Structures are given as C-alpha cells and as structure tokens.
Length: 425
Image (cartoon, rainbow, N blue to C red; front, side):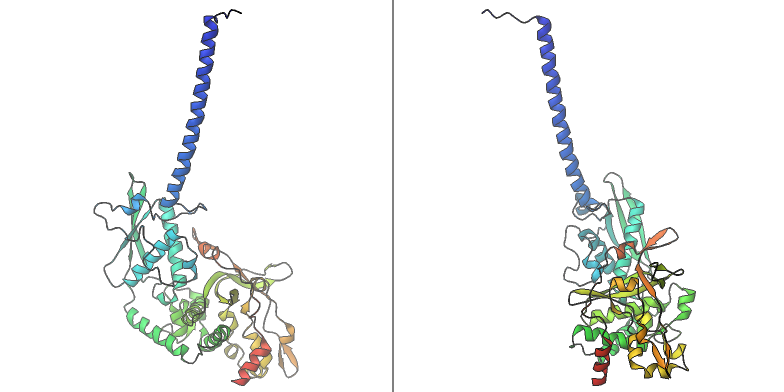
C-alpha cells in the first residue's frame, strides 16, 4: 500500500505535542534537582546553625566558622573535638550536642581565665534572640555541672557579650567576657577547697557507693542549717544559694544554705567521691494525693539525682533536714529516742523514685511515739520537674529535658538495715 504524507497541520500538532512533553520532562528534572539541592542545603544548614530536632546549634564545621574574619580573634575550637576532650564536666555536658559542647567548653575556658583580660568569640548562624537563649541555657547547664564555680553569682562574674552581624556570610560573631569577681574570691575558693577536704576526711571512700552516698547525706544534714533569711529575701548574690554557703558559710553564719546550697554541696561531694549525680530543679510543695496535684502554690526547689548500679534515684537533703532540734526544742529528746521514726524521718527523701516523689505519702507506722502518743510530722508532698517563667524568660527548660528517669529501687532506704549499720559503728 502506498503511504500518504501527513498533512502539514497534523505535522505541526505532532511537533507541538513532542515539544510540550519535552518541556514537561525538563520541568520534572528541574524539580528533582531543586529537591536534591534543598536537601543538601538543609544539611549544610544543620552544620552551620540547627540541630536535627529544630533547636538552635553552634556553627562548628562550616566554612564561615573555619575562616577568620579580618581583624577578629575567632574561637579556635571550630573543626576540632573541643578544648577539653578528656575532661569529665558532668551530667549535662555529657548530654549536649557536639555543637553545644563547644559553647559550654568556651564558658569553662572563660572561667579558667577569669583573672585575665580575656575574651572568647564564636559564630552563630541564628537570630539575635536565639543567640541570647542559647547563651543563657548553656551557661546555666555549665554552672549546674560545676558547683565549685560558686563565685559566678549575682553582680559578680556576670557574663557579657557583644554581637557583630556579618550579613554577607549570614552569621553573628559573638564575643564573650566575664565581669570582675568578688574581691575576696581567691580566699573564698581556698576556704571552699579546704572545707571539702575536711568534710571527706572521715568518709570511707573505699566503701560501696550507696554507703558513701548515705554517709555524705547524713553528715551534710547534720552540719548544715536552713537559711530562712536568704529564702525570704532572695538576694541574688547570697552565698546561701551555693555549695560554699553549706560547706563554709554565708558571711552571716557558718554552714547555712537554702535548697540550692544543700543540693550543690551534695552534688560536689558525691562527684569528689566518684559517684555520678546531678541536680534537678522544679516545683515542690504539699500534695493532694487523691487529685494528684499541689494543694497550694508550690515553691521553686532544687534537689539531686544520684546514679547507683546504673539506676537513678532522687535525693532531697534539704527536706530531709527539718532541723527538729530547733523546730521542736522541748520534744527533740523524745524524737531522738524513737530511733526507727527518727531514721525514717531524716531519710524520707533518700533514694526515691520519680513516681514516689510525685506522690510522697508517709508510712503512719513510722510516726514518732512520745509517751504512748503518736506524732506525724510528715505530710503528703509533691516534687515536679518543670520550667518556670520569670519576666519573659523561661528557666530550666534545657535542664529538665535532659534529666534521667529515676526509677531505681534496689538501693531505696532500708530503715532496719540503716539502724543495724549504725549500731555496728
């Protein structure tokens, strides 16, 4: 059969159809390439400024971080493992991202060079508010890990920083400095170290960890008294909020502290004894067990988490130290005579699980027995991890998101075993 030629109009439509298909294929290819470029850009963005969970991070490996802007002294840690790769900084440091560890280590470096005309700079690929929030969070976590930096308080050793926006490179260059310290800082540090050594002199550091923990707990609550003045007045620079207040003094009295001082001292002593631990902040107060809530407005509080045998436990030295001798002077000798109740009362918050801390209710069989009459000085209480707002700033969010679950039971306080152990001593 003879083939006939296509009509010119049909050839035109065929050509246009092929052209449309080609354009469609090219458009699809362009979309795929753009998607690949976007993925690559997001990866670079993570390296330069964001964590994979969407939180802000510090530039560590980007070109902007490794190149030194003219006339600027950049932090030398970029592209390196860190300033102190072998150092054991504490619980919170161990749970930070590699980028955040760089900022943490930089703050440590500033503290170590606090007596020099010294500053450090670092790059942020973030907004100005992100820079402030990141600085505040990491600085707080560093101080929570290091109670020996008690001198970083109030008007002393405040952290200041300046920002320089590099628009072409899309990053902030942030430079940090520490303010001057207390004129007595060097003497205070010396007194603090001497007090720690004296405290641990009669603690058997070769004993099992739980026995060391118990010995430190008991000695601390027998040595320290609660500072109601500091709790009521809330002075920012008061030493009662530090380990120094508990182990040395506040300047008004020896061995006086509020909850932050008790827990910071306990933390540092356990760390010196080689026991893994950290501090926790939140709310605490009287509890309505039935409705699982606070009865009245709770107070801000700080206590400890201790790791024994790979499991975590809550310990609240402050609330174990109710100062019965001062609160009930006429009845104190009777309280001491009831050894079972006294031991239970002074270890009510020793090695407790999270669930128990949320709904802590006393064992009424452990009430004090005074001349045949039972007295219960303990009530239903609640400890709750939470952040809180002061002004427009939210504190402790970075902390409680990192805290471990405390569900250990093997080393819960055993009153009978405790009394046997003390009788042997």
